[in-house]
Length: 74
Image 1 (cartoon, one colour):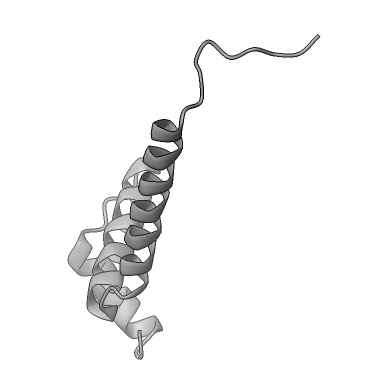
Image 2 (cartoon, rainbow, N blue to C red; image 1 turned 135 degrees about the vertical axis):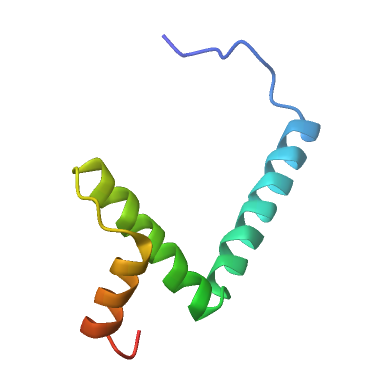
């Protein structure tokens, strides 16, 4: 017994899927080119959020200071 999807795969659908895949690839590639400062800021925000979930009340400034002390080149 073979599965029959409730739609027909057409050339238009395949072209749209290919276009979406290209755009996703471009987005991923542009993320690789993000500035080190932006990556650092995003990392600090992620750590802040994770700590907040765990009930920790450190501020972004405090986490930034800790990060700078532990990872001076980061």
